[in-house]
Image 1 (cartoon, rainbow over the protein chains, first blue to last red):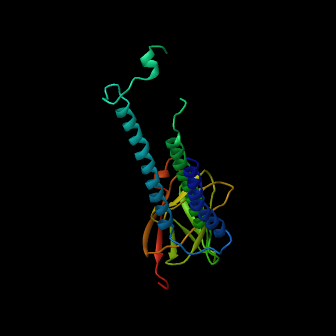
Image 2: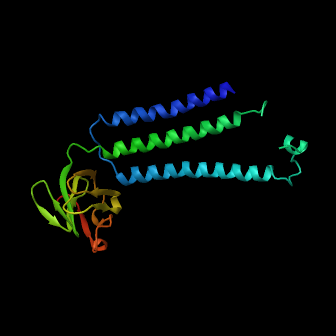
Image 3: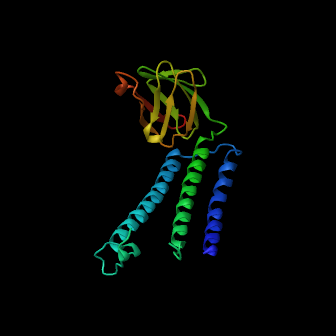
Length: 87
Length: 143
């Protein structure tokens, strides 16, 4: 478990640090010619990929939870509360 | 809930935090890059007023409702307003910035294709807001 969390943190840092470094460096360099349309729409599409990925994962998990833990699921087991009848 | 394994929750939290960091860093990065003006950019003073746009070039030339620019050259707009808040927009070049009385906002871009493009106000500014338009005319070098 700890190894997975550690690996996740390292991978996260490896992703974030270059972006921060690149962003900070941009303030010191002379401005370069660029096409705003390409940069801004590119950013938009990348963020849309993230948004739809998160949306798919979250809604997929909700659908799975609802189906898996419905009372009529053959695999459903009563909870300890349901078994004892006390709440 | 003793004995309950929590690793899926940690993975879930880790993925969400990583994605949020990515979104924030990427947006910040692009914003900084896009806002960084090239040293040789020509300054155009843009003034919004009900209900027209006025442009003043570095050499003092003024244009009303029309803006002539050269393809491939960088232009920095210094945008302000004489009366109420307007918003200067060249949709085709993703230029959009508020024109605020008493304040100068700046944005830069470099037109990449010759042609005519719409300039419009994007902040409701009164009765004729819908018609507060202009034309950006991008010309080839030396034309």
